[in-house]
Image (cartoon, rainbow, N blue to C red; front, side, top):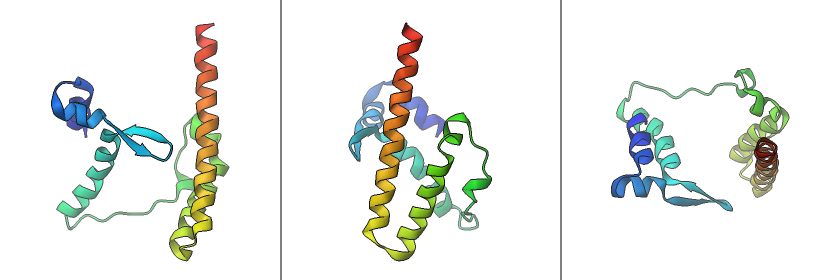
Length: 120
């Protein structure tokens, strides 16, 4: 991932351009490098049959300040993902997308407010 990130950040050549190209993700566009880097873990698990993925309790993970203020929402998102997998009901996915969008909107507004206060 470090090498992949370095190529993307160099902004030199076709590979860097492709890695930085926007990919639709909901209403937003996200650089392709994000999805490529996420796939590295899957590739490693496939390449090393002895390795196993483990599920960790997200409530036991330390959270930085940004995540900590959304702890309740993150717990709800985790539960909705589990419910969606078990029940395969579209309502769980809709609720997940709704909460995720609200977090995204609020965090963007907070970020813009911080940037505005820095420039004042």
